[in-house]
Length: 116
Image 1: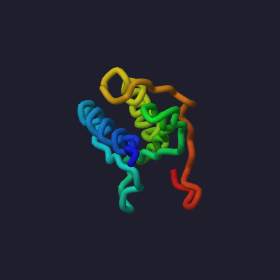
Image 2: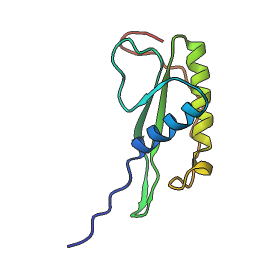
Image 3: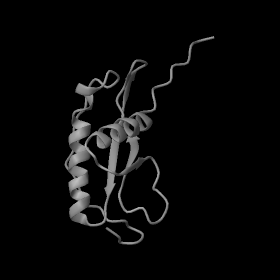
Image 4: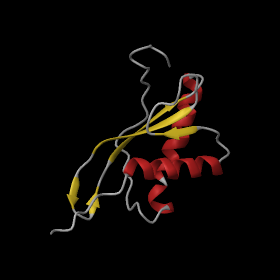
């Protein structure tokens, strides 16, 4: 029987890394892969939106980081901090070899509620 090779959980690793780095910066923010319960105004959601797998040893996930805070100004600041942390990931981790920024930050209000 052939060995089955499964790529690591990119979302889970991102959540663990972000939680640790944000805590080191004194940032009190929820980080996860799902939206938190209603009422949580400050959080970062990590979502894998695809990304190619070159071979069995090289997974290249595309991750999106959704940052929400009490205001758009605070959310933009949180987003900038998260982006800065993510861009250092390859230098601070043994399991990530490369981070490539695929675009800049974007303002995207909740389409269902129109909430910032």
